[in-house]
Amino acid sequence: MLQKSLLIYLADDDNEDRMLFKEALDELNMNVKIKDFDNGVTLMEHLLMKNKPLPDAIYLDLNMPLMNGEECLSDIRNESFLAHIPVIIYSTYIDEVMTDRLKSNGANWYLMKPNSFSKLKSLLQKSLNYIANTHNNTSHETMEFMIIT
Image (cartoon, rainbow, N blue to C red; front, top):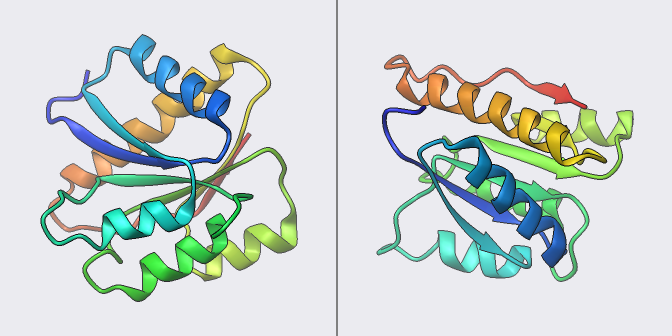
């Protein structure tokens, strides 16, 4: 179990995927709080509010209406006070050209949405443990880019 509570933001336009994500987190019994958004515009509005706590990590669905994950990533990396936050792209498919572009634009991880609940729990546990370890690292090293399927 994580010692310090992590605050995670999830932006995904699919309500069912957001619900599964939250259920998987609940079953992991980790010290994690989640705030979810159904589009990138709302996520960015929330991130830019000065009186709101910043998340320890952001999970972004790649394909969302209004503002997709790639556009959100770009906006996050362009704000100096947000640039340190790990961003994990969370999508149903993997495309090498896209992953290369996301990596060069500052994504930290690329998680492929799994087709089973147990695999989702495993991927979330792995990514959250990595985030917690990176967060606890006093040298603030950046997360290396990883593709997890």
